Length: 114
Ligand code: 5GP
Ligand code: ZN
Image 1 (cartoon, rainbow, N blue to C red):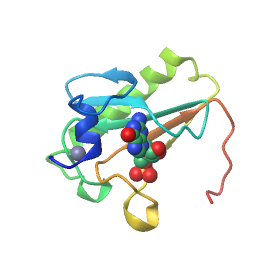
Image 2: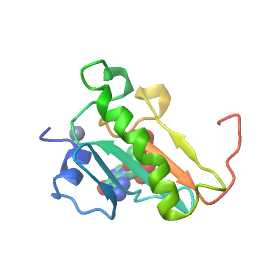
Image 3: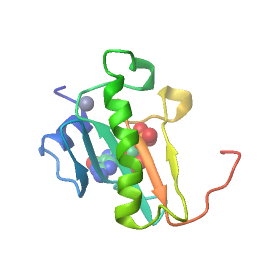
């Protein structure tokens, strides 16, 4: 999609620090990390938000969740654990309209969420 920040990151128009890439998934370090490890994982297809997930595109979501434990093992935070977050829409705090999951690790996170 032409004016989408994460589509531009996927196609290399905007530089990023790549953590993982395959046919379906691109993962890169967040520019404003909220934890020692803060990775943004996106589908290579433009899907605006979690609201747009359906049976035609959910393969991208399953591929993302297949890759999460692999990234955790590679970066060594699988044992201590991690948090996966999706912000959807205005009240969810979504600022980039391309579906993404935040994978954060390296510190303990509180609950309930603020
Ligand atoms: P959201 O708030 O939509 O859930 O998450 C968007 C995330 O993208 C934020 O954590 C923000 O720091 C990150 N982000 C925004 N612009 C860029 C960028 O140009 N490069 C990278 N690596 N991350 C970005
Ligand atoms: Zn996009």
